[in-house]
Image: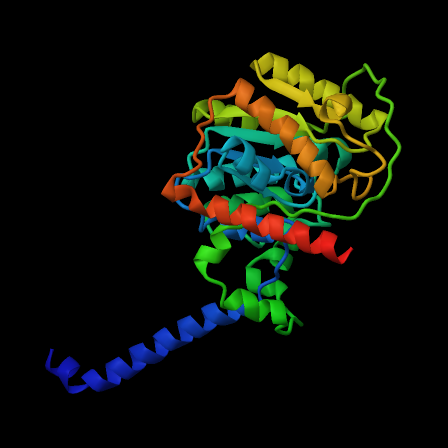
Length: 342
């Protein structure tokens, strides 16, 4: 004790500089970390949503955060939803995303889009792996996700996070993000609309055989189903509208068989174009994603299906959910600015 008192000032200075170093590293990490609204932001901003406020979580690939308009779900149906998705997300990452969000939220319904297992057949998918990994906090769950997602020789290409920041220099958006408040970030609900109109040709759906899903994808789909059942979470399997092809429909027919075995609802909405009022001349951003107009039509359809088939409360007007009101304002502002400048 005497020694401590004698050197008290020295210890205080050492502790001050240790604290300053930690704070500086955290700020540098926040400044230089890769920003992307195609998975990274969806994962990062999930952590600052009000605890147990997300009733419906939409999961899967970019088809989710481009096509599912969470602002409209809130404004028209009072559904507190979040698009917790990432570009080309395989089902093994979706499984660990599901476990991650359930640490912080208690969703009543998971809506899972199944485009990725139909389109991508490799057991290790690297093209958008950074978008899937970087927004997730370090934990044993993340290490398991990394183990499932890449081969051992590639681990240190993706972990730890700062290993991916090399050759990055701060840009204006980095500084903006550094000083963005948690309140402002909480109004982001994952939805990232496109506004370009790219005419498409309506696909013909005639495939009646099933198959084509990989062993790994089918195993993780079963893991997702069993996790939701174990945790009393309802699961709704969907396919968002896109220019599908026969090879994809093979997989969806197999997924339909799996859903029947588990007593789940499976809805490939590629069979509901007329019901949605989808216009192939105006409602697509590209062959794979809807634009803002298309997402509004699709979301109206999807919201009605959810309200009809699942017991999801209307949270409008409640203080805990006020960030969804600000989310609506932000999406409406983005749409208004685009069409005024068009």
